[in-house]
Amino acid sequence: MIPELWTCIFSLFFFYVHGAKLPEPEVKIEVSYKPFLCHRKSKYGDMLLVHYEGFLESNGTMFHSSRHNGDKNPIWFTLGIREVIRGWDKGLQGMCTGEKRKLTIPPALAYGKEGKGKIPPESTLIFDMELVEIRNGPRSHESFQEMDLNDDWKLSKLEVKEYLRKEFERHGYPPNDTHHEAMAEDIFQKEDEDNDGYISAREFTYKHDEL
Image 1 (cartoon, rainbow, N blue to C red):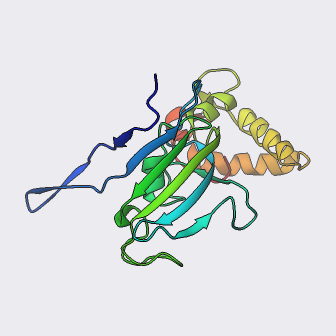
Image 2: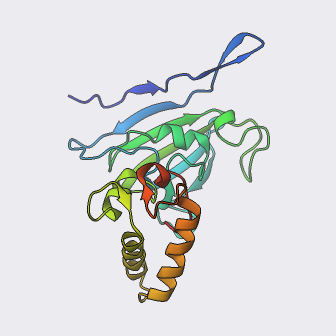
């Protein structure tokens, strides 16, 4: 049986300063709800849709809530590429859709000495998180396999153009062969490092805005 509440401390990564080992700050994770079925867990590079409420540990004040502030909708971000504070990147790995976690994040993994808005400098933050949805990120292995139509572990210009066409349609724009051709040429100039006319799986791992 899955425990109702458990705490997981992330592994420490060490660096040396004048020969002494210093631990990196930790994120404290408490899982308040985990679905019985979990077909996929979040990993670096995934796009996550989350609801959250943020509190100051010092006095319990809520400084922001996706459910009550702004448009009251959950937010999308890509895990692991610093779109959000480091505490989120660390604390939301290995999470199931529908799972809820409480993250306690030290200042060094949040807003540090500067603070931000309603968050004073050197604040430890608490976030109640709910993972609503997981999607493949633009540079994930799953996306590469989706683009690699003939499963040969490399992308041709035709495959890239087909992907661009589908993306345009998915976002409600009509296909534009001239535009797709120009975009594909630009992509290959920047990503086809060995100039063999294909983008390999290794070359694909580097971020490019068009893909």
